[in-house]
Structure formats: structure tokens, C-alpha cells
Amino acid sequence: METIVPCVAVTVAPSIVRITAPNPGVMTGPGTNSYIVGQDRLIVVDPGPDIDSHISLLIDAVRDRLDWIVCTHTHLDHSPAARALKAATGARIAGRVTNQDGRQDKTFEPDRVPQDGDTITTDGVTLRAVHTPGHASNHLCYLLEAQKLLFTGDHIMEGSTVVISPPDGDMQAYFASLEKLFPLDLATLAPGHGRFITTPHDEVRRLIAHRLKREAKVLGALARKSPATLDELVPLAYDDVPEKLYPPARRSLHAHLIKLAHEGRAKESGELWLAADAR
Image (cartoon, rainbow, N blue to C red):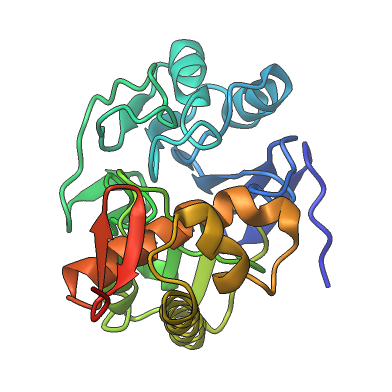
């Protein structure tokens, strides 16, 4: 099994080079993947965090051949390097903006805002934008149709599930965005964190099943303790994760509860959450 090493350019598929940023961690796995796509003219998918060594590697790899910098979303580990990469190469930036919630890249200024189904093209490379809100409201995946390969950003990451953080993150939208991938003709997922996934639709089904299992645990937690605060529910709904992961788990728990409230299966009263049939 491949071990991802930061700051090393690796050819991972025909005309696709991956450079992983040196920002490993609980939320980023081995680091954020930046992908360089093309041969003569190039597109960078997710330039990554504002880390000088990573930006220098990207500049050295693309030199004067870069036409587009496309960002899946504007979290701080995915888009901040776009500004410096554009300044060094003259390439244009594509991506969507969203409201600031404390987790967004304030420097992000796109030259183009892709809509669902739009294409971004340079010589020999065409990427089709797929709007996949959930992890972030402005999240886009990019489909390289010639290789049936989907750059998934944080919609799907290898080896873990992504955190859904309200208010910008939306669990109901995330489920719908996972379902949206089933009609696509896919052979490979290229995630923003981790290695390629070569069973795309099986992975989507696994993620949906996992989220539904977690949702059932959230309902079970409400049945055991209602009304309850988020902090009181986390140890019940996430008793299978280390306590150090409770802070991000709390955010996804909140997203699950908001979804359940929209569906009439839970309700909120101030800072307390209740089962739908609780009085």
C-alpha cells in the first residue's frame, strides 16, 4: 500500500501529478493533495494551504504552463495557496465563494465561478464541475471525463469520513450530494486527502451506510437522554471514537440533529435537543 510522503511530486495517473502539502493532522490525514493535470498546458486542482515550501514546489512543477487554478472549496487547507500561485504564474482562479464562518479563506478571489455542469478547459484537459454542497456550501468536485476520474476535494476522503460543520456544512445536503454521484460514469476518486479510491460507487454506498448508522446512534442517544445539550450527547452518539475527536464529532452531531429536526424526528429548544415525541 502506498505511503503518501509530503513535498514529493508523484505521477498517480496519466497526465496527473500529486503533490501533498506538509500539513498532516487529525483533520487532514497525510496532508492536502494538490493535483497537477495535463501535459503541455496545465490545471492545478486545489493549490492547498499557504505554506511557502508547498507553493514553491507547485511553481517549480508548473513553471509557465499553468492556465487554471481550480478550488473544490475555500477551507484553509485547500485554497489559500491560489493567491500566490496566481501571482507567480498568471493563471486564472476558478471556484465558488461562500459566507465567512471562521473556516473560510478570506483571500479567495475567483476569476470564474463555475456552476454545476460548467467545464474548465485547457489544451487536452477538460474538467466538469459537479456542485456537491454538504461539507461546505460552495463545494465542487471536478470530473476528468477522459479518465472517468473525479477530484473529490473533501466531499470524499480516503480512510475517513469528513466533518460537517454547521452553519455552512449541511448534513441533508451532504446526503443528496453523495447520491448525486451514482449516475456519473466513474472509475476513480482522487480525494483531497489520502490515496486514490478505485471503487467509487461502492465507496459512496459505504459512506451513506456509515452516516445512516451514525444517525441511528444519534436518535438512540436522544432516546436515552432528552432533553440534552450537544456536549451531553457526544459521548453517547460517538462512543466509538477517541475523546480527543469529540470537538469535530460535536460539529457533525449538530449537523445530524439539524437534519433530523428538518425531517420532524428531533427538535431544538434553546441549547437543548429533544426527541421528536418528547414533551
